Length: 189
Image 1 (tube, one colour):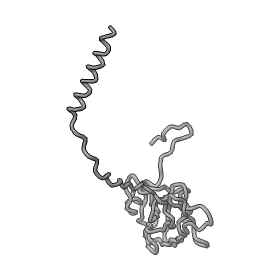
Image 2 (image 1 turned 180 degrees about the vertical axis):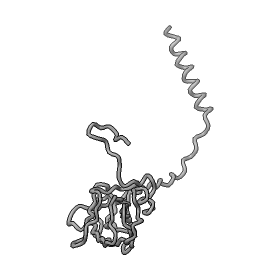
Image 3 (image 1 turned 45 degrees about the vertical axis):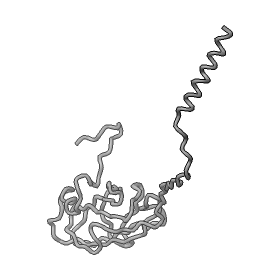
Image 4 (image 1 turned 60 degrees about the vertical axis):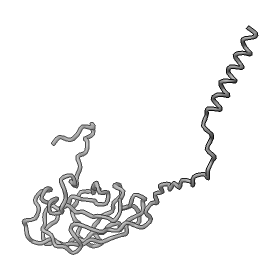
């Protein structure tokens, strides 16, 4: 048995030498490849204040009285939880629901209102010193004013669907949303 171990060791060394000889020659290393340039994605919050860029009714526009879906569109994505829309100082208030809805474009708020015939409505956006309409970086929108009139024509929108059509909204842009009742059930239609 003692003689077999050295013979076995010699066989292993001979096999290893044969493999080393049979291996292809190593390639001489060349210059290293240039470093890979990786640009990390950096998102910088918008620091400029959002601006009102579009509204319905437009400033100075005369519309038919009746059901009105008021819309205001900003130049950048907004937070859905902040808004400040009220009658301008000394102006007649426009009867509206309490809370506007932010549409899926994240820039447009819609609010269900009722406009009376032969009136001038002047609204102030972000007139309060704090809160109000804010972008997703929580920068307040610039204060803005919106004034429009209603005609004496009594053939204005009589239901929410006519009002949405006048505003140019789609069915999914409904200014009110179904909310669950206290038990968490969906409201019945």
